[in-house]
Length: 448
Image 1 (cartoon, one colour):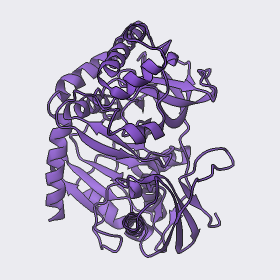
Image 2 (spheres, helix red, strand yellow; image 1 turned 30 degrees about the vertical axis):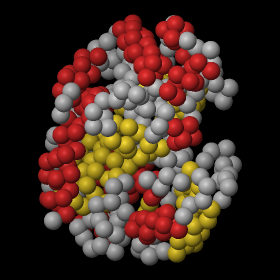
Image 3 (cartoon, one colour; image 1 turned 180 degrees about the vertical axis):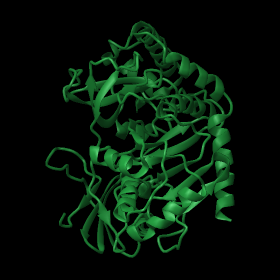
Image 4 (cartoon, helix red, strand yellow; image 1 turned 45 degrees about the horizontal axis):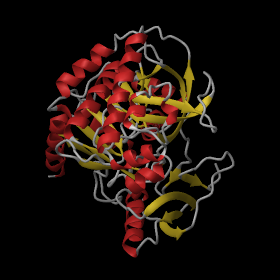
């Protein structure tokens, strides 16, 4: 019955993403991969002008913000990728506060739907996707993520992500559900353990999975269990990871277990920037997804080889434009030209955040808890801390005061991920940064 429900959702999801303008947008995205550097510059200037003028004319937040800085429509028309620093920055807190009101255009595309994002900073936001915008984004994603890895969205695949496909942590196998219309096996990220590994293997074999996608750490945990148990896993075409830093150890483990290459990448629910790994092993920025600035703490562009914070201006979402949005992640740019021949900027490294691992009493391992706080609009920031083998402390920063229902929702969601644990929820005014000056969403105090 649950597979039927998952497949019904999958049919709707497939039509939403791959119908409408997708075929045309996909063809155009593939053609742009042959652009010269000059053609990319011209494309960026045109797209930047379109989104900036639209924001000024139709988005109250930007009109007020630009005018407050003395920027008229005529001034906006003169802004280029090189002079975009004249515009104010959009913080996560401003997006959280205004994202569903004044940051929305007065004229919107049809069938808009909000998707929650908290990302690695613990600050929840709501991102509006129309059907057409979703299809434009998926066109670039298909061309640069799936195709560069030698696969596509229409062949059998496995996914380990944040969606809960089982009712709770006490459920028995199978720990996956099958989406018939997308040929997708959605594996639970919340039940990966040595004793459950063979059930995950069965799901991969039963549905003839060609490649795996999803959380880097969750995929790594599963592959490592296969290796430790001397399980002969299916030989895959690729592993495509996201959401966490991909390490050399992970790449080697996937190669040992699945006999395939791993493809790294960076994006987000915000859909205002995309970095993906090509078949030659280089990470490329997709300029047609959005303009990425990489800046230091003084808001100056960083030199090649130096880490900087990503600020993105999306080119695809006109209903909720994100302009100079501080997405909070850090990358290092490279000045090399990739042997693949594409004239798309190269990234030396996606730094990302390496979180601690939380371990349930039954051995399951988790690093991602962002979905715990989705749709809890009073929660501004949160941190999950493992105090002991059976005690979890959740620190929350609330907008006002979190009510009992929200706290119980947090408790139940964590129990559904980890099984029987003691969950303590503590409201705090702020959550301190770690010794490196970074926010750490997941902390383990267990001896490593």
